[in-house]
Length: 271
Length: 101
Image 1 (cartoon, each protein chain N blue to C red):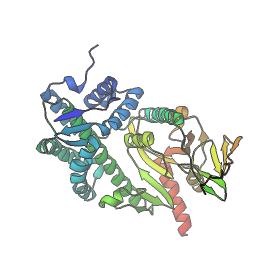
Image 2 (image 1 turned 30 degrees about the horizontal axis):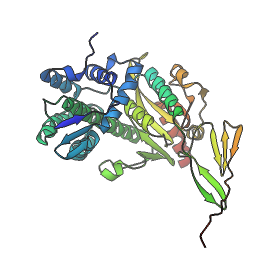
Image 3 (image 1 turned 135 degrees about the vertical axis):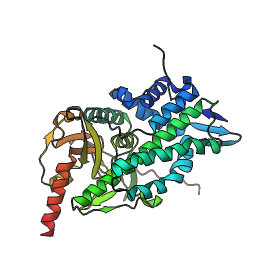
Image 4 (image 1 turned 180 degrees about the horizontal axis):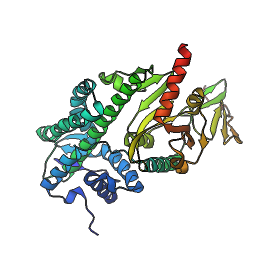
């Protein structure tokens, strides 16, 4: 068995992957940028055995997500507190990954590249699991707030790939962890009307959910904005701040404020 | 400084590190890092070529952007408006094909 890493996967990518796996808090902004690039580059790394060739992405889709996604999501949906209970379940399933890779002849401790396959598999499983833990927790929160929405069925593998995660008032939205959102942003367009994500507020030392939305959505919610360059936007957040990206204009603000406005709009429409 | 990578790690040490990794909780980026990365990715994207798709309708090119909203560029039929000012209008000439007769 041999593993070929992509030629553009450099020593810097390798060092950053190592630093991240050891302790993500050691990464500076440039480190995060390189990390996102590294795990996207590894998608096309190849495992060659005899005359068969698999990319890391194919192995992950087939042996990990294809095998474990639905059972993970079924258990996640049955949980009272997915945000807390989902993490141990994610780890429990991840422990099967090494065994499965080895059983399929895809993991050989003598082959250095195997470490990158395991790192790749763990990283994307972690990303997948945390993404859905966050998504389910947002659905629960919207339910508790009495907000009406239509969501895709995450237990259906086809619907998991649906064009958007949820629709509220005709707006198409996606729910993504911050790193997953940044992966999506670097490799594809941002076609939806709104995105819900989760960030760490260093000044308050607390997690904060944020919404990025098209100005038309914010206009429907009667919101005001401050206009800022993206690099200054962090100074104004969690207040509503308008930024320009190559995909167009977005308003970013605190999720709770957005949720209250959506609830108020829906109440007004029902009256 | 020695460049530390997972290549050089002892197998046992590597597997212990990975075992700790899979137990990790949410590790979202900070608000500052998020906007900084968004800005960096945006700058990278602005360097990519923007591909327009088009088709010929009634002898004129009708162009379309790959996504519904791109800052600074508006497409109207065969026209491209840059930053709301500079206009590029595309007129394609119909060439008569010579057929052997």
